[in-house]
Length: 355
Image (spheres, rainbow, N blue to C red):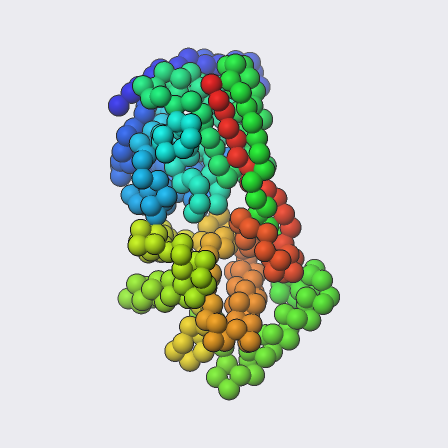
């Protein structure tokens, strides 16, 4: 384990104080770090489910469902007076064209990533992180940071710090990430969407209720049924040809781990639309930081003419409103239906820093 002590100045309202920051580079995910990690995340600059200890631990176990066959953990922690104040969850790979350090979680299955640090410590941490990375005994040439939200305060500080170090900084927009800010009632929400869309939502919900066996909305909450619910969800995903190709053996394992871990952490929102005992649509979501994060979905194409995806999404939005969630986050992807339901767009970026 590599350690580094860094002196730095912190500006306060009364002037400057001297601080001492201790850096460590860990090559494993120690379970003992879990509580500290998640407590830090609760006050971090970016609070997303993909930065929880449990999620990234599972991601590392399968290397992102097999995305990375050649990866070496570079988990950097910073402490002040023994208190954990920042984490740079990175890994090294030469699987890329240029040997690089990337965020643990990159690239495909973790929609949003960032450093884990409170706003007041961000600048000092990044200023000292660069020289620490430079003296690592690893042949990396680039720091490649995928899926950073465009409103992350990390962006401008990274650029300034890189330029001071004489390193090249490049930012690229990757994908739109639509989300719906939720009203405090279903009727207020509907009033805020396009008139034609409002009519379509009501019509499809009415048709679902008028079926001989009405469609029923259910959120998985029975631990004894969770394994079967997970299998049924994956089976619905596999009805889409592209998702079937995506679901390799390693990726299926990753999806099972995501569902089980999210349930244990109290942030699973696995929603089904059912006709009798048959599941006709499903959304795998996270319920975290007072919003619903829509991760993946599947539908039973035998019921396609009954618009099960729209009906389920409408029920999810109603549930989120009734349970006082502030937003429904579609995360990455600009599919048209997201905007029909009233989503607005922001983006994720990729930042590349070359030395």
